[in-house]
Image 1: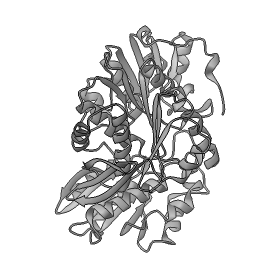
Image 2: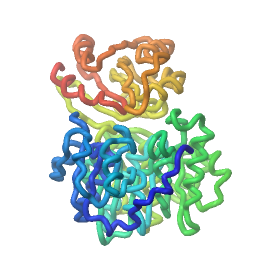
Image 3: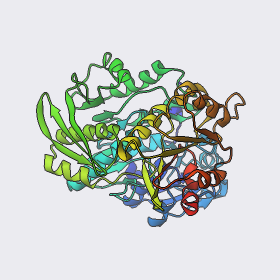
Image 4: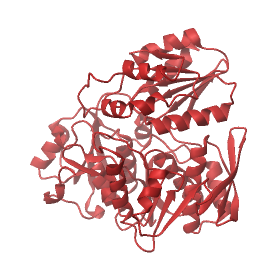
Length: 481
């Protein structure tokens, strides 16, 4: 892995040494979660970001956390700590440079999250897809058990809880989303979860993603295995046993673990899956003994598996079954995870963060199951990063079979990458056409509503999808319905 920041002299070892923090890139979902945590601890918050509407704006305004527009050296006064986003230049951002000149300690988001979790009983939720929702479900269950705890989840909002992050001074538990992406691309490519030292880990799945960092599935599996090996003897790894890449990693893991899934070989098995009106019901068995029947208000078999992982962890934490059931039923989803945006003229609009082929398949399959075979599903997909689109093009091409119509826009490029002329939204659309009859390419996402107006029918389901800014056209779509 590139780079090692272990020689930095300005290091904060204890959170109680910090009374003020500046967040460079405060509107990032992970950064907002940490800002909420810091505010709960009475730490003075300042921040900066670009002048662009983002999914965390409402949360920051609700918490009365203000931010400066743009990244400038003059934004840095004398905070006790600067936490830097991985975007907008990361550790080369001018505010970071200024902080170092002033001998102000600088931490990346990954390092800072590790600091917040220090001396807590850490519960890390990782995986290429599903980690955000799983962490949010677990936080909801623990919240409704009235146990003091802390959490940080990289999402705009967890609907039953409000904020994406919270810190309780009295609570010993800390639930955190654990991201496998690079700490600071090109400077320190160690995974962001490197600084977490959890007692418990939930792993939803392992797939090849982030090809700009991990050249293949073997490289991805290696960092996950290294993370799992941090689990102490009295901890547990809770891992999806239906995922083949997970099972391959388990062959090299000697620590305590439970597998879960639908397959008969799993320690914890999911059975009796049924769909009711906008609800999924299912049963969970441990070694052939029924633990209970459960209900969740979000679609998809993958979300049933996500919920099962949280049930297992909750049982380990000795949360009673009836309280687990209550927590699950209270969970209403999160921002940008199959989020219901609105309905007009019997047409429903949803938004989803899916940006990996596996996630796209799962989300569309769930939508098909949720709304039935006779519903017409229109998906508007904005691929995220040139590197991912290019590397996973064959998988992307075959991911849209559960949609009736597919609209592809230009690629949303990462601020960290250069334009790659060998891949584009048009090339992606052409690849999908080999497997799907109804595919349109619209370069500018803001022109999509015009096309929608021409093709829309009553009772259609529209889903905007991607990790970029495709969600911004949702309101315009509802306006033209």
